[in-house]
Image 1 (cartoon, rainbow, N blue to C red):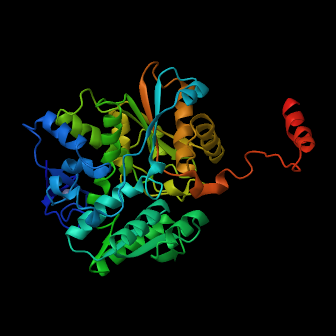
Image 2 (image 1 turned 120 degrees about the horizontal axis):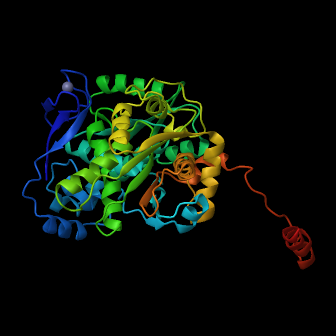
Image 3 (image 1 turned 90 degrees about the horizontal axis):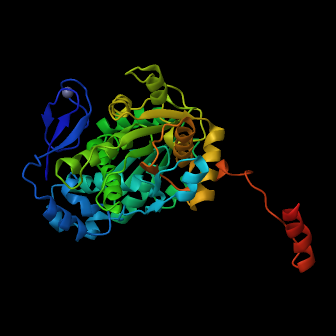
Amino acid sequence: MAAESLKCRECSATYPLDARYVCERCFGPLEVAYASLDGTDAESLRRRIQAGPQSIWRYADFLPLATPPAQFGRDSARLGLPAGCTPLIRADRLAERIGFDGELWVKNDAANPTHSFKDRVVSVASARAAELGFEVLACASTGNLANAVAAQAAALGLESYVFIPHDLEEQKILGTGVYGTNLVKVRGNYDDVNRLCVELSGEKEGWAFVNVNMRPYYAEGSKTISFEIAEELGWETPDRIVAPIASGSLFTKIAKGFQEWLDCGLITGSVPIMNGAQAAGCSPVATAFAAGSDVCRPVKPDTIAKSLAIGNPADGPYALDLARTTAGGIDAVTDDEIRHGIKLLAETTGVFTETAGGVTTATLAKLAERGDLVSGERVVLVITGEGLKTLDAVRGTFESYEVDPNYASFEQHVTQAVEV
Ligand SMILES: [Zn+2]
C-alpha cells in the first residue's frame, strides 16, 4: 500500500503529495489517499508488520512516506524518537466500579516518549517534512503537541518554533522549553494561536507546521492507535472505542485505521461503535450531536481540559457523522466529573492521566450509568496523555498523614485514624 495523492474530502479533487492541506477548488480539507488494496495478501502483510520495529514504523505500509517501508524501519537516525507500541491494559476493576459487565481495556498513550499520543502524529509529520526538505518544524499547540514537536525536532537536529496559548499549564511549558525550542506564548486562546500559525505558514518558506501545512500527513499518525489495539487484541477488533474529541482528527482517524485493516483483510468484523468525549466547557461537537445538527457552532473554551480546548474543531462535522453512522455518540462532562474521572482511572488501573483522560474516563462512566454499554462487549478506553502534565487537577483531592519518626506517632496518627 502506497500513498498516491492528497485528496479533498469534500469534492475528491486530487493533488500531489506536497505540503498543502486545503482544496483549491472548494476549500475542503485534504487527506492522504492510498493505492487500492485489492489483491493484497493479508498473511504476508501481517508477517511484515510482526517483523517490523517496536514503534509506529511497523505500520509503514499504511503511512504516507515515499521511502519504501521495508527500508525505513532501520533508518532510525532519520526517524527520530520512536513513538507507539504503548500498552493495552485490561481494566477489570474499573469495569466493576462503573458497573459494566463486559471486557474493558485501557490504551495508555501516556507511555509515548513525551507522554501523549501526539508523538505518533509528530513522528509521521516530521518524517514527511524531512522527505520534502523542510528545515524548521513548527506547530500551534494546546500543550501536548508542543512537547512532542520540541522533542522530535531535538532528536532530528532541526530548528523548531512552538506556538502556545500564554496561559498553558506550567508543566507543559517546562516540558517544552527544556528541549531548546523557540517557545512563543501567544496572548489569546488556542483558536487565536492556530489562526496566527495559518498566517505564518503562508509567509515562512521552509517551515513545516505539523498541524497546518503538514496536517494531512500528521493526521495519518493517529491511525496507528487502532492498528496497535487490533494487534494487541490478537488481530481482532473491539466492539466500542471511547476517545476524546478536540479537533476531531484523532477520533475520525482511529476509525479510518480500523477501516483500512478491514479492507485489506488483516482483521474481520466492522468499525467499532465510536463514542466521543468532550469537556462541557468546550463541547461544540457534543452540543451539535445532542441537537441533531451537522454544524459545530464555535465556542470560547472554559475548561480545565486545556488539551481538548479547541472551540472551532476542524474535523467536528466528520466526528459527528462517524458517531452517528457507528451508532455511537458524543458526550460532554463537567470539570468536577473530569477530576473524578482522573481519580477513578488512577485508583482502579494504576494509570495516571491528564485532564483529557479524565474527560474520557468520565464519559465511559456516564455511558455505563446510562446503560449505553452492551453486556459482554469489548470496550477500549483511549487515554491520550500523562497526569504529571496537569497536576493542578488533582491538587487537594486526597489527604496524607504526617508523623514523627517513631512507632507511637505512627500508631496515633495513622493506625488509629484508619480504624476510626
Ligand atoms: Zn475540494
